[in-house]
Image 1 (cartoon, one colour):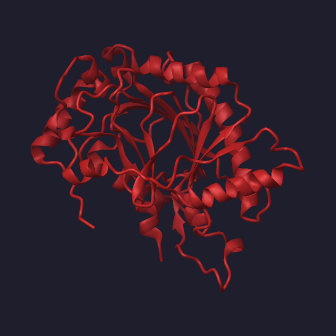
Image 2 (cartoon, rainbow, N blue to C red; image 1 turned 90 degrees about the vertical axis):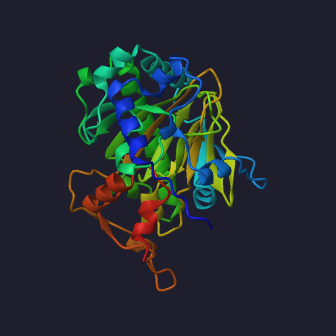
Image 3 (cartoon, rainbow, N blue to C red; image 1 turned 60 degrees about the vertical axis):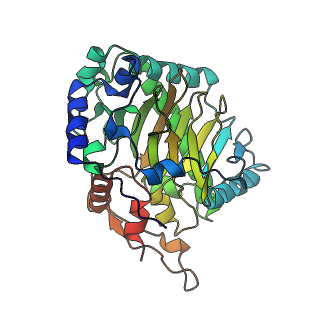
Length: 365
């Protein structure tokens, strides 16, 4: 396998910083009518050649109906469906999850509305100070990752363990972000129960361990790209969290890794995508799998909008220790990963940025 060198040059990083200082994001570049993307967005040949890779053995991700989740008759089947999807695919889509379609549509519209505001309005929230409650930026990990930039902008809001001040959330989407957070947590709590049962644990085990106590909302915009074959919407990575709940509009672009190729995740109106994070792969001792995924650069005039809510344990106690659950270990199934503290978790995250499956690799025994 060829070694991929994604590192950008000094001149490209200088140009990236100049772009960052304008605080217009890639949406601003797209709206300006440029025909050629800046060089620091151009991906290396190894990445570009891989964009043509598709899987012929997988047609999509599992779709799981949660309408009878509280039925004693149907729940075991749903548990088995989710367990199998988490073991083999790492991604699945849930329908009849209890969130009104109107709420989903309102959330997408509000995030789109935020990103379509004039650059000078959005610039008030533009920042690189990671860890603050509300932040808007393009390629939020651009400097620490030190790789070619991707074609997307993001609004980031930490919803828990400490709730943001209402006035800190942009007024354009404030009501919808708060509403979405409430609904996403309910869905996550349900799915975490099912995932826990799928491991043979008590229904409330993951809640007891605080696996939804920390919540991060992100509202992404992937605007039209004039040269989509030269860059990417967001590069290949797996999520560090326990789990993520994803909502997207009808503009395609999301792909998951399957074998040596990639599979399109087709938007399903009214559906929510669940994906397993690295932390759950580690805690489940590889019973559940996180999967690399990416977003292609958008060739459509309509922007691709997605919101994702990440769920994790409370990160305020840096000494809290996590690792494979003892209940899942035996002489026949010893621990595959070492334990880690939240401090170490955050250090790895802020060092690596959005890239590959770095947490899983770092912690493997």
